[in-house]
Length: 251
Image (cartoon, rainbow, N blue to C red; front, side):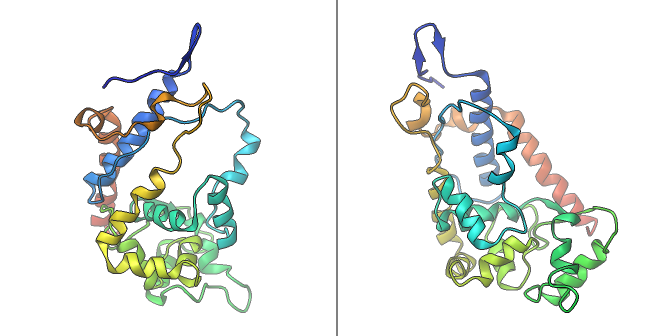
């Protein structure tokens, strides 16, 4: 794959780490396609950061206890709308979560009168309590019990049934602002497949500054791009296989 580099005299701004970020972006996109989701072009490149501090990270990370207003604010700060937030939440269709990330959902919702979130499906809640007894070890549970190794719209159907593992997941259905999107994508796979590429193209670098990667305007659609850094793709597929194995063992 030929790549134009954005350079200034005696210095090229495409750091080796940028190659890794590009590879991860492409590998994640390909893993989505290989696990049943849509294939779509992704824009490569980003604006170089001028500083990096651990103290700046916490406020930018999503938490399972965030309110919908907090989630929306974090996404908007990154140039993404509520539509994008609901689409990107589909990432929870594959993977696992530690009990500690959702135990308050089960045991400390509004104590003492209402310890469990009433929006949870009772059968699903009983299953989770069996896997994650209060005060027990911090085990892991599949995010999606129905199709754990498939990137599909089952995630949205789970929300309709009170099966959102994280409290922040279930908010997407219980809040009237996001429920129509959940219902639409739960009903039609094709509608969701068309929606997913939208946020992926919103976060690429832009601007004419030398700090903007020259690759920001290019789309990774070629067969060369799709095969880039195959080790990362294989790693993601192994993770999917691991999830499938856990499901077989009735996690």
